Image 1 (cartoon, one colour):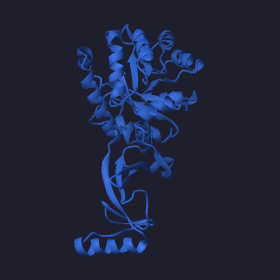
Image 2 (cartoon, helix red, strand yellow):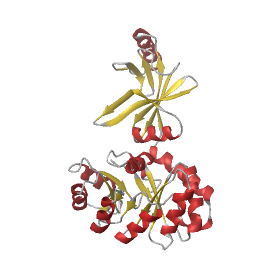
Image 3 (cartoon, one colour):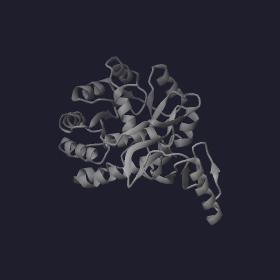
Image 4 (cartoon, helix red, strand yellow):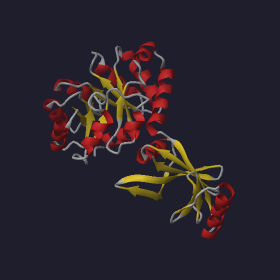
Length: 319
């Protein structure tokens, strides 16, 4: 997969932006980066799109700038000349796809059903825009497409907001999610950059869906974990669930049979996609511990972060 497309998947959110004036491009781009969403899809729905893309590309460090609503090869060329790193189309267009593929420019043509997905797969495209997502069947349609097209990933866009983004983010076939709820037109027009930064931070948390899973205590040996489990059972009536490496005294209490990361133990945090969460924490300067990774069906299921909070390690788990 192209490095640009990989980066889009790591961020997980693609803000879809309509600008009426290029003067707002740079402060908006800086608000996106500050809010933890360093991607911008500037749509060609206004004449200032090329100028806006050029300004963001040149003056907002760390921002990955692309062009959206591209419907002609001429627009794709204008976007590329302005500094766009990727192109997004509302529907399939042979001329636009050909132009981008010939120049090595990542392209996300819009599809809404199996015919479009088959066309994209035949051209070697690994990621496609699913549009209009909610109107085209939403998550159930994506689930249906994942069966025959297991190697294709999607960027659903259209009708998605903070309320339903998590349902999409949990799907393994979803590469990233496009939307404009964090770049509302009235806020862009009024220059409410602090408000947009806040919405971006909220969007990131909604995307990941972080939630407490359980707390784990490290035992020096299996006998210690078993004794603790018996106490939880006799005192509180918590039924024990035996595992290879630990005993769960309840859904929220894990008793490790041997020491694991964390001086005292660990705190399990569920998230919608472990790979995407690992990328986010890496951006924040927090690495994962690769030796602790567990995968299932080709997807990362669990991993520890190289992070200690009051003697407890942090263990990410797929929701």
